[in-house]
Image 1 (cartoon, rainbow, N blue to C red):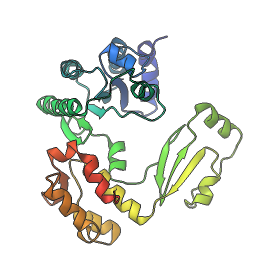
Image 2 (image 1 turned 90 degrees about the vertical axis):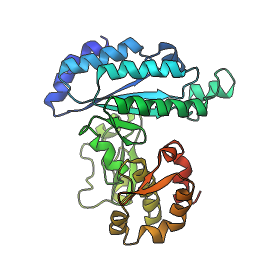
Image 3 (image 1 turned 120 degrees about the vertical axis):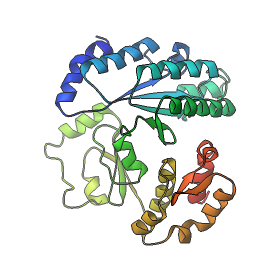
Image 4 (image 1 turned 45 degrees about the vertical axis):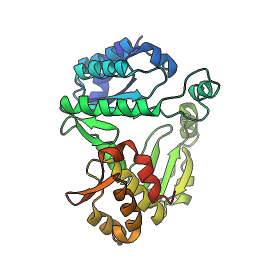
Length: 301
C-alpha cells in the first residue's frame, strides 16, 4: 500500500499518541531531479502524502526542499516553490545540496557523469526563496528554515540554541551534560541490541562516558569541552534570526563575548558578514550566504 494511502490511518494513530507535527522530505517537485538525488518517490506522490497528512488531521506540517541540484534551473526552482506555497505548509526547511562522501551522486559528479553544482546559481535560488517566502508571510527565523508565525520548530530551536536534547531511535543523536552521543544507525541492529538487554542500564543518576558506554544502543560518545561548547554556541546561534545575545553568552560561560571572540567578531563585522542589531550579534543578508566563512572564525579555521 502506498504511503499516502496509509497516512490517514497511521496519522490518526500518531495524533492519538500525542504527535502533533509531521515533516515530509519532498526535496523537489521535479521528477528528473528526484531521480538525480536517488529518491524513490515522485513529485505527485509527495503532494499526495502531504494531502493525506492533512486528511489524517495534522495541522502542523513541515516540508523539506533542496536547491543547488545538478540540472536544476531557476525557473524550475520557482515552480517548485510556488507549488509548495500553494499547499500552505506551516513550516519549510530549505537546504542547499551537499555532496556527501561515498554517496552515489558524489561518485557520479566525480566521474563527470553528472555536472558539478553551480554555487552562483544556488545563491540565486536561495535569494529567490527568501523573496517568495517573505511575500507569502513566512518568517525566516533560521538560515535554512522558514515558518508561519508561531510555527517555528521547537525541537530545532533547542539545538540551534545549543541546549540539551535527547534522541530516541536508530541513528538518533543526543546532547546531555558535557557529552554528545549517538545510537547505532541500523534499525535491525538497534532492535537486536535492545532485545539482547532485557533491562538496559539507566543513566538517571548521572551522565558520564562510563554510564553511556553501558547503554547497548549507544555507538559513539564525544566529550564537549568548554572551548568547543563556546564555538558551537556561536555557530549555531548565528544561524538564527535572533542571533547571539552577548549577555546570555556571559551568563552561560562566565566570560564576556568580547574577551573570547572580540577579534573574530571585529573581523567578520568589518567584512559586512555580521552586524550588531537590537543588542544581538547577527548575520547580515550577505553573511547568510557566506555563513561558513563566519563560522570557521570561531573554530580557529
